[in-house]
Length: 109
Image (cartoon, rainbow, N blue to C red; front, side, top):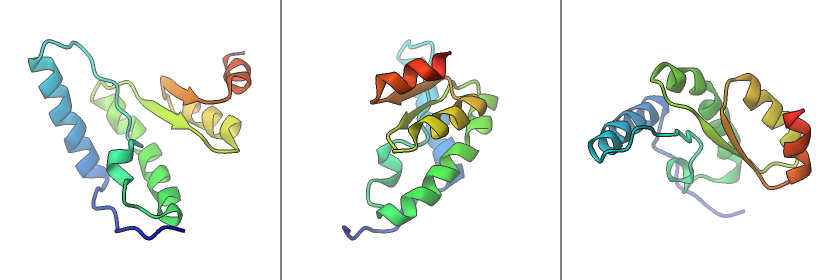
């Protein structure tokens, strides 16, 4: 396992980041922004054991991002992707990136 520094981004930091990015893209003429609270920029230096806790924190942010009018995008790369993606859809995630098309087809039914 690789060694990693502790992540310095908490839930409030992530919300502040997306608030600032939303203002920035609107000033540039973009009418919308999709939030990915699980983006690698927030946990790039985190070891694999701590990433699981971070993923839970990211999922807890979904309702707060919706309150800000931001649709949410999450990546589903785990072996248990179908159950994880089903949970994310239940939480209101609007966009999920999945590497297994057969799972995406099942989720759409």
